[in-house]
Amino acid sequence: MFAPIISALRLSPIQVMAEKTRQAIQQGHSVIDMTLGEPDFPTPAHIGEAAIQAIHAGQTRYTPINGTSALREAIVAKFRRDNGIDCSPAGISVGCGGKQVIYQAFLATLAAGDEVIMPAPYWASYHDIVAMNGGVFRPIMTTPETGYALRAADLDAAITARTRWLVLNSPSNPSGTAYGRAQLAEFAEVIRRHANQRFFILVDDIYEHILYDGRAFHTLAQVAPDLADRILTVNGVSKAYAMTGWRVGYACGPRPLIEAMTKVQMQINSHTSSVSQAAAVAALNGPQDEVRRRCAVFQRRRDFLLGAFARIDGLQTPKPEGAFYLFPDARAYLGRATPAGQRLADDVALAAYLLDNGVAVVPGSGFGMPGFLRLSYATSDDNLRIAAERMAHALNNLG
Ligand code: PLP
Image (cartoon, rainbow, N blue to C red):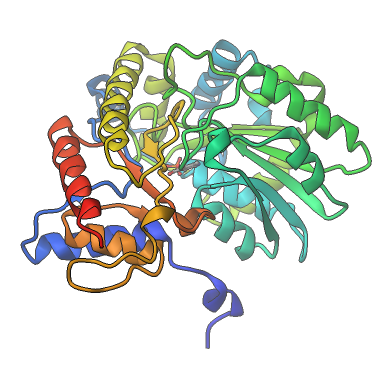
């Protein structure tokens, strides 16, 4: 009755935990929700105002597939200003979130058996979007000891004749790992060495503006302009401007790839909402100081949680360089017994136990690393304090 892909697809581990959390809260339990990857701030007022004005001005009709010319120009200007990337309005794709842009890139390029390589831990959706489009997802394992950073030698070993895409996501969801200029240059060197393998590189910069400790942001197309005709640089307004619900993501890349992606989008949803597009123009062209202020808040929260987790013996938590997640190694707790006598066989059981103790987190297996946990600290300071206390109490109670 249903296509084979439906049984092959996993439910998003993030959504599974978010749903369990909603149910627990509905049943009257007190739960601090650290599952979702969305800023807890409101969309800045001037952005909402621009949307309201767009409605009053009658900007409520179909737009071009890749957005209004005002939006594409704002995106071109953003890439030039922030990233030193030169692209033309015709080299821009705009979709309902970065997710749609990523989906279309794979749909437009993958044939059965083509491989997509990406460092693990990875954003869970990559795994399933690749599977939905007939590809084979090949994670490249990293370790907490290296801060989950991809090593050039491991990248080199992972590239094969079947490689169709390499995906880099920096700062990373879920690990917060960010690559500087030197590391990106090393990756570029590896890619150049494999001159016979003409794969694309998807560079997911959606967390660009959430980068800590004064680090400067770098992206591959800027560091290796000679590879620009193979790089799709994906970004969006969701995380930087707290606009997850507006659904605007974009990318710049080689014209033939953008044209193929546009052909696909034309038959899916045409374009993202005209009103959201006006809001995205205001976000990209408007003042950026709020973005920096919010980044400082996230950094403070990161530091608070890292300090609290350092006092929990079994958790090893590398220091994230960006994004708003911690990805602790919790393998020391597997096999241990809860006060009720249940043995925690895996990270799913551990996350369920933590939920029973009032903290909702996502098991690392969904991100390609069983035995780890992902926690989003896009929540209030009070919530973080309570969550840290509950986690310490629950984990210290394991037999
Ligand atoms: N890429 C990464 C790594 C993400 O974490 C997300 C959202 O969680 C996205 C892309 C897509 O975000 P959106 O579709 O809201 O632009």
